[in-house]
Length: 151
Image 1: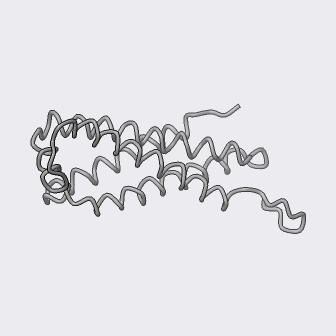
Image 2: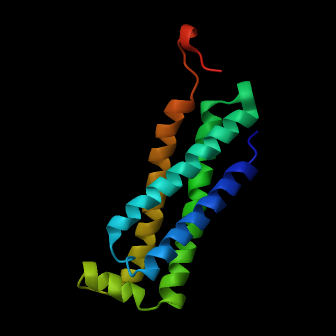
């Protein structure tokens, strides 16, 4: 049975890093440039990688592909949910003009833009989580080759 404390801790740490990065970008008025959001994948990827690595160390020989996969998904999903909630709070309460500024930079129509942006932020986080978890598990999985089994 998998314990969720480790991936939740890493997910919270990742979301804190994502929020801090976003706030630093906002200090320099760079939050409407979506190219800076590419670094979000690096932050999330690092947290997922570290969570899987620590899960593998904690479980030792009991570590399975399924265990690592669950760890990566939970880590990324926790980070994504918390960051999406922060993003919704930031763009509606802290800086209400942010979405209008973002939409004028990228779209002409502002109707229903809030929901589309929140959905996009969440989907990007979930997709990044899935892809990075699958990628990292290729590094951590045990080999089926008897001569090359990892510890």
